[in-house]
Length: 428
Image 1: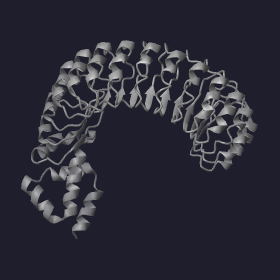
Image 2: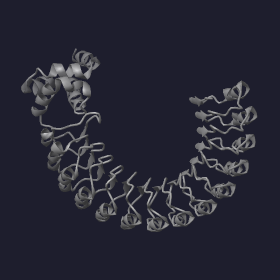
Image 3: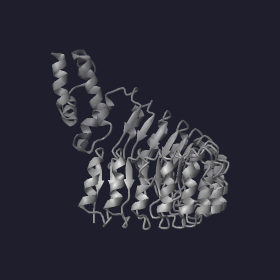
Image 4: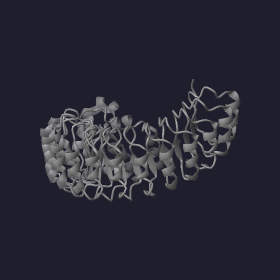
């Protein structure tokens, strides 16, 4: 009987169950519910925890929801997530969660002050909280157990705000992407964060080589994303040559980097992921410096227009590669594609916008039987004969042949042997 009751309630929307529960007093909620059945009590707890995610549809019952929060001892709650489309302005009740370790919230300066009481907090994501200023960040400096902090797109934060983070020496993961007012001065404050392993700072346009020099002290760094640091030069990359724990590096859209800068990466033998896309000054000589980094699994050199077949030749030793993007490398021809046939571990290959790639180039792809994603869109010289060579790539799940104008219905008929295809992109 009890199991049937639990089953019926479990079929109701969470909002309705919450509405029913809001009419019960504290004694009934804590004792009678538990006595009905263990399953029923667990269901009740599950719904309340669900409500802590603040689904927008619950706003009409927010007063009842708040009253429920105040009636419970929430010491066992360790994780709360709020929907990002809701800006939370009042969270004084968070003091009810003394053991909270994980909080994902979009917040204002008025509310963030209450976070300073959450001494056990280890994970804090306040990304896209665009009303947060340096004053708001100052309240975080007492959260010395923090290991993960994300302030992405909190664009009112300046170097002063970053200065308050220097005491958070347990931080392992920090994301300051799109905090546009941060300069070299702000990065200098981070050099005390010697436990940092993950640093993401996309679109921090005003950081120069000086800022990058401060990161050389962060010897535990494994992940570094400085995409769009367009003021850094080869000198800046020289500071990374001792960051031998790096596994992930994104320096895309860093337009001043040349082959000399890439030469500093050749000692980073643990590197598995490298994105140098849209670095226009990198040539075949720069790619040669990468040829001994045999742990590469992901390489993106798209839109590096000075790379030719000779540069692609150096990739043939990177047999662990699983993801390769050479899109918009307009000087690569069929001959360059021929060097890829040894990369039999490739699962994702993008050769789109290959203006000089023909059916012969597609022929060279036949040994790549582990391919799951293949993009040959805008390769305008490929015809039905080229598509026929794809018949052996039976593991392909995603195939993009958009704007390959010479492919006809005959070419498409060859794809019927690719029985694992889930997404086929065709457009003229």
